[in-house]
Length: 139
Image (cartoon, rainbow, N blue to C red; front, side):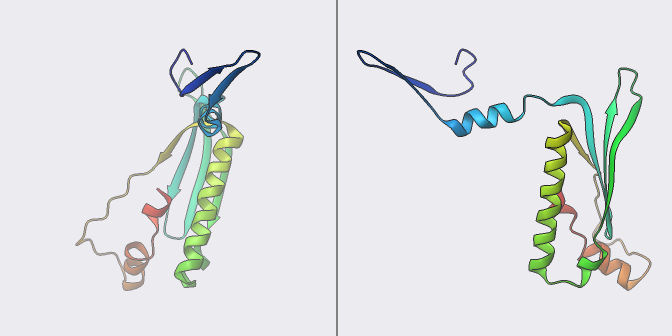
C-alpha cells in the first residue's frame, strides 16, 4: 500500500477491520517477483522451425545454455488456418511456460524485416517466407 502499487480500501466496524483489494492485481504483482535478471529466452524464427534457447549470463558476459529446443512446424504449412493458429497459440503458451519455469526476466526475438520487392530464390520459397511465415504471430 505504501508503494501505491494497488488500490486498497479500508472499512472499520466496531469489532472488525475490513481490507478490500483486487486479488487479480495482487496475483499479477506477485507473478513477476522471482525472475533472474541474468536469464534471457531467445527465439530464432524460421519458416519451418522455431529455435528456443535460455541463456544465463554471468558478470563477465559469459553465458551458459541452460535450455534449448527446436520446434518443427513444417507440417503446419499444409494445415487449415484455424489449425495453424491453434498450434501457434500452443507454441506461445509453451514459451510462456518456459519463462515461468526458468524464471526468465527477458525475451529476445530477432528483428526480421522483409522488403516488399525482395524476391527469394524460388516461387515456393517466396510463398513460404512471404505468406506462410507467421513471424508477427509469435512476436
